[in-house]
Amino acid sequence: MTLLVAMTGWHVEDWRERFAALLPELPVVTLGEPFDRRAVHYVASWKHPEGSLAGLPNLAAIFSLGAGVDHIFADSRLPEVPIARVVDPDLTARMSEYVVLHCLMHLRQQRRYDRQQLAKSWDDDRHQPAARSVRVGIMGLGELGLDAARKLQIIGFDVAGWSRSPKDVDGLVTFAGSDGMLAFLGRTDILVCLLPLTPDTRGMLNADLFAALAQNGRLGGPFLINAGRGGLQVEADILAALDAGTLKGAALDVFESEPLPADSPLWSHPSVTVTPHNAAMSEPEAIATLIAAQIRRLQAGEPLEHMVDPTRGY
Image (cartoon, rainbow, N blue to C red; front, top):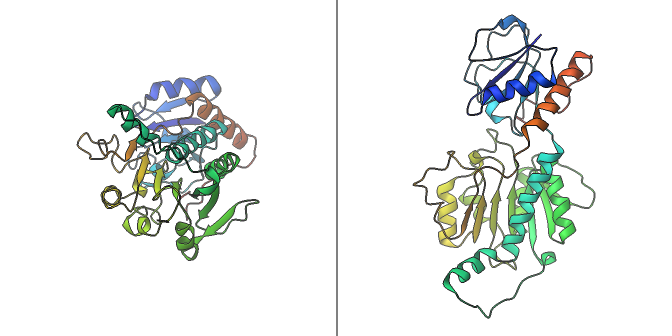
């Protein structure tokens, strides 16, 4: 049995060393070297090249090296084997930190005060609404969304959630599907998007959705926080909504093209906060340890955890 580390954009040798230390009994190979394709039972993937996993006759499982799995499903020649995603308490905590940070930044109008500081302007309008009067809507009620919702509730925000299919969550108002979307958006002052990227969600953060957000809230207009995937958003629509006042501000950690091109107007827009896709960067050691534990589960005849539903894409 062999583990294949298949990736682009990361230092593959670092990952080989991590897995070799955690699984000393298992040969670890990479795409950049000759290896016996019949021996490969497991793949650890991050944006592996198209078709590079084809022709592995004994492949038993693919493990994503990141929280999302859209990079795996981008391969049109993907083998039909179980796929597991990362569910890491450290990653979940980091994402909630990001969401809470930017909700508080919008609540306490920090960008406005940053501009005033640069202008050396002391504004006598120092009013701050209470968190309980601000409605946060979280799109995506998986591990990340639910944890963020609970932490926002502790601070005092009025939180609701939306998911593709109905979810009954104790103490949380929830909406589901296309039938619940308009009601959800209409009570949202800060929209937090933590959805996976699938054919159904691609481009859904668009002009029509922004127009349905609440315009009567205590913040003077709605805000967007996207820490899900860049393919969820239409950046031209975000800029147009900001300029028209349909959106009052946006905090974006992900983008249609990454790294964000230097000529993107998002960099310099006064109502946009740009972060470099680092909202929830888990420690590589933690991810490798989780995957090694999954491999040992399979070798012991136990079921794989955190499996992806290929019909849903997450």
